[in-house]
Image (cartoon, rainbow, N blue to C red; front, side, top):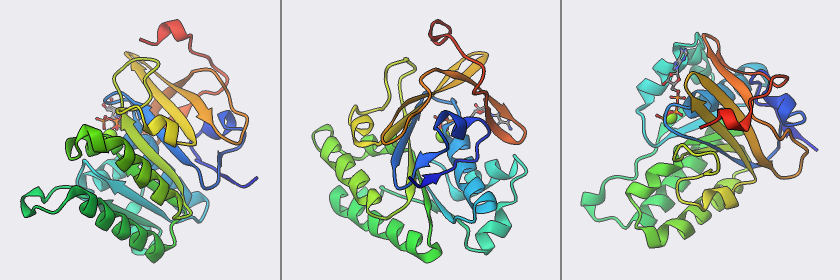
Length: 236
Ligand SMILES: Nc1ncnc2c1ncn2[C@@H]1O[C@H](COP(=O)(O)OP(=O)(O)OP(=O)(O)O)[C@@H](O)[C@H]1O
Ligand SMILES: [Mg+2]
């Protein structure tokens, strides 16, 4: 089976070598657990270490802030952007004043994502964060919309990470309770100060580790300790 290595120290070992290629994987966690850092590191590593271009789609931050955060880890992203190895794209579901139907707006944004993927031949895609959909879509439409959105992303041929901001509990893996079933995999992040941890909750098509492990945010980015365990009782 072909795998997409995250290149994040310690993580691929937990995944038996990497994420099965073409998967949609949910990166879930409460506020400040490291979702954005982990997913930016994933596209950065792809471009630098594996020759795979990446598209990072942000729904909540502006492009400059994402770039600035990446540069704070000494990742030279300008060169990657210039060489068409990395694109940061701000997806905007707003413009509701123009009375565009949200379904049409999502359709339009999906086409734009697809165009950006083709333009750089991206193999890695990130959507940060899917939780923002909740601000624009009424609850009755949310499940089908997210389902269709993920389905369409899957057809683009990338290995995709989607973030979801959850309530800080151990057993909640998505904001709307649908993303976790749609996704092929779930990587859960926890922060019980001062301890951060990571747990692979599911990964279709591969063996994977089944325990929480310490995660550290170092000046070079996220590092996971696959040989150290965190007790479930220590996660709040
Ligand atoms: N350079 C750094 N060194 C160490 N820790 C850092 C560094 N930069 C950020 N952090 C820590 O990482 C946290 C933010 O991580 P990140 O933005 O990835 O979280 P997130 O899960 O995306 O949060 P949100 O839900 O707010 O989007 C900060 O709150 C801080 O604790
Ligand atoms: Mg974030």
